[in-house]
Length: 486
Image (cartoon, rainbow, N blue to C red; front, side):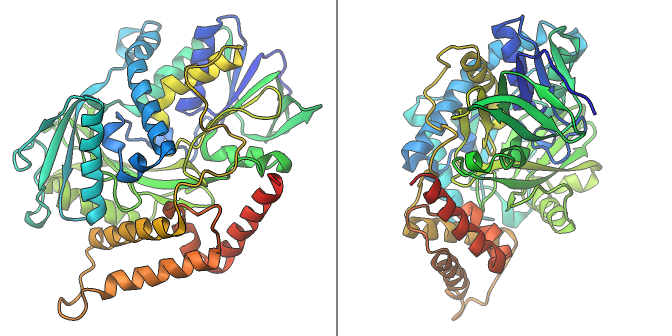
């Protein structure tokens, strides 16, 4: 057990967002003493398992473009893209040549018939966003794409090339940021897990550690991804004023494909509650394939045989049948931090000196230069880099009416059925599958009985998996929200 004093800022979280914030603080004020708290193995963290597709247009969905909050998310992505060149330079100039990192340019977005109408809508939304913002793209012949050799019944029907998007090696980025912190005389790692907050007189005083010690500082940034919720729960009156975090558990795999290296990111639009099927080049003949997305109340620390089988089947059928000859390097499991309204939590809280940086879902790594610099500037007394439209202490943002949520959820469930190869007899049964899911979804939303705070479709999986326990959980949660904001 040890107490740590003498710090100006404590950053809770040693993933990309936490370390980006520490690096940005050093750039903003080289004299600041900053502690980064987090367990060295990063169990279940999103950063270590990330595909790290670099761009925002490939992530655009029809739902994103329908609401002001969705448009605000896209605006932050466009702003983040402009920060990456200078950000990488700030990292690389402090590293030896062999440790420097670079973006791999180019993303190909393709659409096939293995999902449902949601994929068509999201593909159209990507084109709409590109054209609205005057972004570069090129229409491709979907049957002449290097690295794409699917089964006959999975042939792509459309494809786009996005020259200004691409990928980065998440492991190398983590390693580079870690090296900067380790070599800095004013930045420190504390290999421990934050479990609570010490607050006195409305001010943050310290972060409590699992091993029993404390790290004291007048400023604390909570950027621990899905693990942030456990820290907030140590202060219940504060926690219930902040949209609750859940875990977007994802499975991915790393393959050694030998000399037949892939040049660009290959991906579908987002579909079936997930970020789309994607293959990301890692250099040296390695290929990252991802990713599943299932929301849980608690972090997913290991992948399941079901997710393994599903992801391999998708990769071999929809990407490249020749991947069956590749060598398996690793399975990876990570958890994306998802707020109950699916919007991020960025900015100060009512506790003086306490800041939040989480809830970024699938966008945390891509947004890290922008968000790290924004929080660093705010902590140091500056105005920040953007308007804080997703302040942490807020009522959950209502993105759907009940009718809209039911309709959107149905599209995703039908896409899931298609991806899993569910087929019914054509005559007399073609309406049975949609009606089954429609009745299930109607029943879930009726039981939740919520009109003011409509549960986002992504979170229905949590309820459907344990209806008896989770329906009362969410009803009680929303009651607490109302009481907190009465």
